[in-house]
Image (tube, protein in one colour):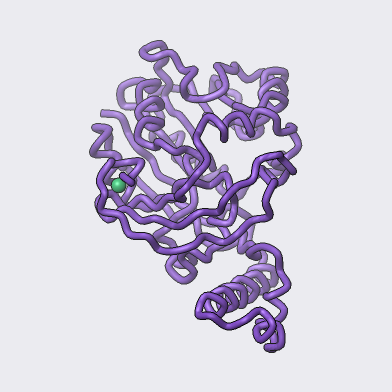
Length: 304
Ligand SMILES: [Zn+2]
């Protein structure tokens, strides 16, 4: 099977991804049974991907039906001020597009000097964004008419990990930019310390709608393919850190990883269930999340 980004077949299978409760998608019950699949690594471009993964049209149709309340994005995310600083530094003009804008929370938070546009597959969220004054251009990047836009910046936060053909997606966003404009992207980082520690056991891979996984090396490779420049990157957490929670969640995911590793070595659930601490992890249905870890990457890709 070729890499979905570079089409090369220099692929390393890193093993099973964590199971998720079947019939759950975007935190909601659905009729679709999803196989967690395996964690694949492309040695050519450094993309990690889920295989098998749901086809993109199935993913999009699942997002369409999500209620506008499914992701609580009404509170300010810790990385929004950093994004605004990058926007002010790198945007070619004050027209900004948010791809995957949900209900328009980030756009509404931006200062009023920005002309705000959005793209969003969720029907309820898209309607809400339009009512809040966002110029809504469609459902997905496919709805951006080629050559019709010249945005100073395109933002896309927590979206590219849902995309099965990332180079095509980024090319669509690049084509919507004015010359000198930039893409600012945020996603999970496979080159972050938490990912290096936990690998395929990491919580980020236990979310069924996450199908592709990225690093700085991948974005450097992709920038070259797209005739763009990786202007800057930073690793950061996607949630506000509170050290008690951070420590508790680190302990939980460590126990869970130990439990999975021992089970894969053939130790029975009955034996594992009797061990101190690990026995507790044996009763958890899914991977505990380490939401406050520094496990995301924000990149700025600039159009030449
Ligand atoms: Zn590749």
